[in-house]
Length: 223
Image 1: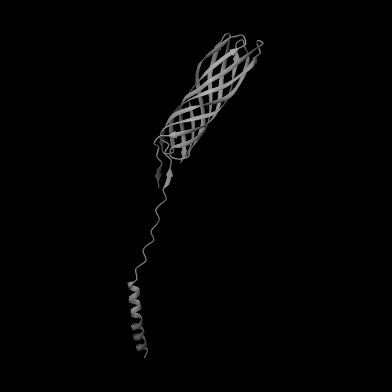
Image 2: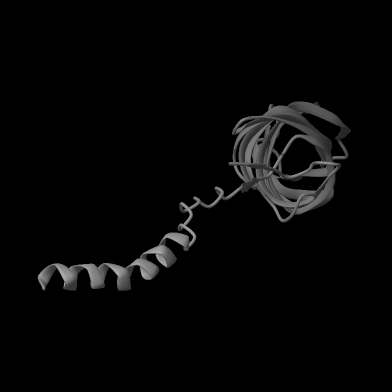
């Protein structure tokens, strides 16, 4: 009797087993493709505009002792080129700004006023920095120059282009593949200028905001 029960059960279960064998097997799970993280490419030529504020002084000596503190606005443009190697960016930039950075002081050796005025300010600099995707932190330095006029109330004056050095740092943020904005600080030392029986050493600090347009610099991707 027991053997008959087993035989009947086997006959009843056989069709179900055959149907289960015909079911499609579950495919192995496929791992999702890794996300492509966009990386901004800083390499290429760029041009832009900037504006800011400058402050400094002209220290008079040799017959007219005093220090004329100067300040005023500046605005202009820049041209440059970047070359990116991994996260490091090397480049060169030149800029030229109209300036109205001026001031005066009483010269203590003689009862008169000494004045200093910058009509323009520019530079030709190297840049080196570190890129974190679309943010660039950089240091910069090179030649600085400016159109300087020195004068006093006796009528003595000198007006010429002064050449010295400049150095500073900045940060640039890429809004998209072509446009970026930047904030920059530069210190200029324009050396000593002689006029009449006096001389003056002029330095300027400038804080600037700017906008750059990058020519044909595509964004690339990495995995």
